[in-house]
Length: 429
Ligand code: HSE
Image (tube, rainbow, N blue to C red):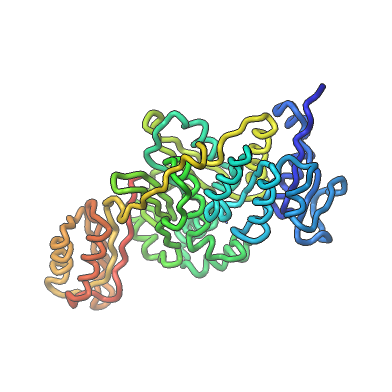
């Protein structure tokens, strides 16, 4: 007798939801062959039933309330692709777990805020939450960490995981345009989230990093401990000068476990222009995983969009159809440690840009501030004078962020500084 179909309840009929419908309908035979059973959609839910959607939904039951959808007895899995870290997405996920269903979600915000509690609840009733689509869209980053690298002690996880930010930064660099103008372009192209700060404030990418860190280091998700800085203050001057020194500016996420605790940061930083991350153009994502046995793995692909995100959702659905069940964060949620956040980041070289009054001894005063903070200069350039001022660029040897802050804080008192200095961390990737 053929195995019973796996029956989905689909909450959310936006771009990702419709992408899932299309794959389920168009690839029914391929999915059944791979999973050993059919995957069907029983019922769907969305805010507006009357909206014209590019898919035939006529054979699916309609539920106006996603919580009712989640509780239906004729579904096995809730596929939640509505978004939002509270409200209907959370209520539907909790209802699905309470009524004994597995959950497949693309919702990074929900898991970044409530992942631990949801995972404990799911595992308490023998269910799992899978979220491949929540991190870096179509890139199978979660599978790579939980399955492919399961035999490794993970050293470091890095990623460019917000395509909108990477589009803005690479467009600024290639077209020589200022941030505000490219931000507006991105808005007109429809790249920005409804709340653009989720993208350009680094929050969306920070959510994703916190999920990868939980799996990588066996710790409870701690999004609140991610050091976050958006790209709004990245200037075209810094992009140009960084390029001149052989670097590119990226919104880069890094998570690593150190002797001082877990470091997680999602901040603009300089990376070598010829590194894989430095070469990443446009809205593409990249996830870099480093394990003790495997070394470095680089995954690159589309981080958003209908096809790539639905592809990731379907990978989780097919796993469940096959009966392949991995705990939500790669090990039982109850065994995840409470991470201790590192109070300061590992030392790194820094890029410092400032404008100095062009007079004898100005540079010496700045060098003294650095020297007295224990910071050694690696490279220095002075660019064409602008009237009585001289733009100066310094790359330091490795320094603690607190020493950089201390030294740059003292620049103003030298009386030779014009405006504010810029300090950007340089990452070895
Ligand atoms: N807004 C995100 C991005 C996709 O630009 O990459 C959803 O997380």
